[in-house]
Image (cartoon, rainbow over all chains, first blue to last red; front, side, top):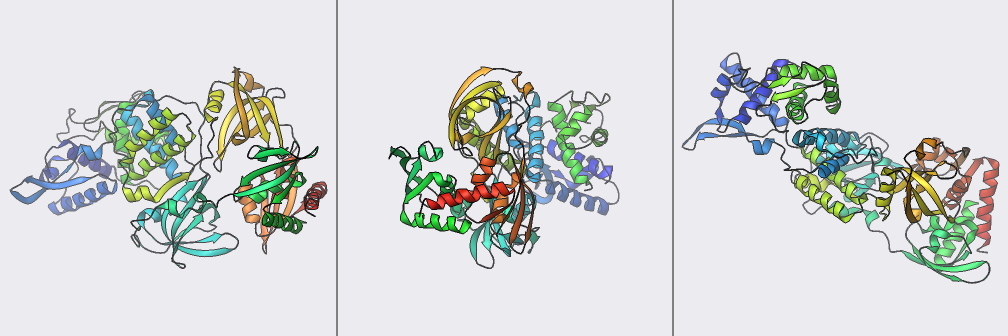
Length: 308
Length: 309
């Protein structure tokens, strides 16, 4: 890429930032370094430069010098839109931001976190930052698919992928959002075949993400809220159990329920467990005998038989 | 991927305010922060040196001192004295990171400070954007997180009353925590046993009581890894193998699936633990190797079933 173009774009940005009033095209061509060639060439150069800067997220305002004559348009960049302004940041706040920027294992957020921190250090200086020790904590498991999913969500493109649960199947989805729950990302969207909102664990997607449509293929429903669709946040009500447990055993259950002694070998505990009840109970092998509810006793018996 | 002129412009516009606010860094240090090379940063500075405001005399040009690559400074940033605003994705990265941070910060004043900071940065993010990505519940909360962080940062011993799931016991021991980490939202500490100086992992939500003890900054130097022998295990299971893989990926050394049957090789260092994992798994798991382990697990299941006959 040419140094000339880079240089010209920087000069243009600086000139438009420095001006209080709108600069007309002619003023730009005569004053900003880098615009050379015929009138037409300069015109085309400027149009492209403008698009390029906008693609970088720089807001170029278009307006007129004179409210009475709006025939000649001018350009400028307002400091307020261009500059990062977070006000004073205390050393502790800077440290929080630094930690927050480094929490991510997905490449997209890891990169944008690093860039955000550069900007924050340019805003406040890194010397002030208090270091909270070297331990960098991540609450996120690795996900190579994060970037394409993120792109599909923000540009509203329909996607398809192979999803693995009990069996493997292709799913086509208008992706509405992502949520992080206990270390894993979950994808929420409108399943195109079932016409229903579904939740997918990203770790169970076994293929690449294929884009099935152009941008802006769907709109996020105005009443959409991820939280409403997350089954894991709305667990079934827990089940009350009563069980005999060997004295000195089943420690984690003892802390959750009322214990009464039966004899020299057994205690009785009443406790409640959620959806993981079966594993929690089987964990203690022969040290527990569930007495009620009766349908759970039946289920335990059947599972144990099937395991032999 | 080849760098475009735009990537370069974007970096250049951030370079000037960054160096202005952090004078005296070396080219190498600057390159690290910008995920670039020293050669590239030098080229950028040479180019920026010729940029400036209309007029383009030495009064209007950017004034950068990079003659000594060990100490770079910006003498006159002109209008580039502030960094560019955060992009929506950058702001979101910080806001979500802060949210996770506030989940593990247990001090209410700390939480409040974090949430205020979150509000300030959230203003940059559009509503649709913010709505599309959330954190449902990052961690299983624990009231002792604060004490654990303190113990690690101050190199202190802790006395913990711990419920070991694999041995189904509650015991009190003195340990020296060295590291705190999370997996699937559950917090763990790595700690050295005071007596054996062996490294062990403890689940934070199984610590029933914690008492901070004395500090010993040199204790970690004596550490050596656990002497427990690794056990190699081979198992076979049905389609629920996919969920076993997901839940216990850290012990799986290899896996393959043939016609709906999963063949897994595991490596563990606690036979107590793996016996319970396999016997509590709702689906059928066949232990191929070692034979002794297969027998023991079968006995556990038989004895449990006996309870209900």
